[in-house]
Image 1 (cartoon, rainbow, N blue to C red):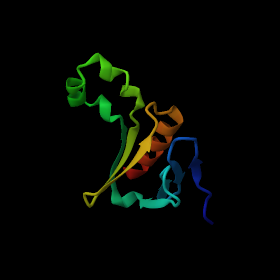
Image 2: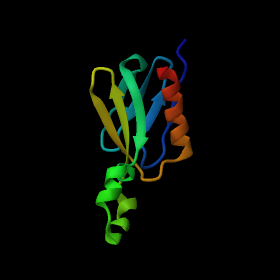
Image 3: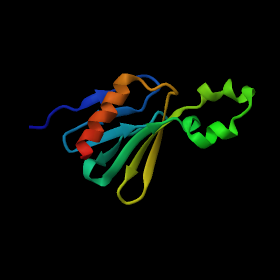
Length: 109
């Protein structure tokens, strides 16, 4: 008997469906889900590109600081074959979304 998936569906986030053997993700600008087997993923991370140390050096002007919050965060799924998939998320990541990513990360181990 197949269990129902655990679903995360909130406006402006990619939709996640977590199953026992795999998970599926649907980007905001795409019409279908992309499945990922846990065994084929090396890591999953969610980050803001503006928070990297080298961007802080480059954005030395006060004018640039006003637009920092407009850039989306990135959800990156790194595959064992060297490829990766990136999905856009809001600048501020919710705790619910982080908990879903934590569940996926736990299944990768």
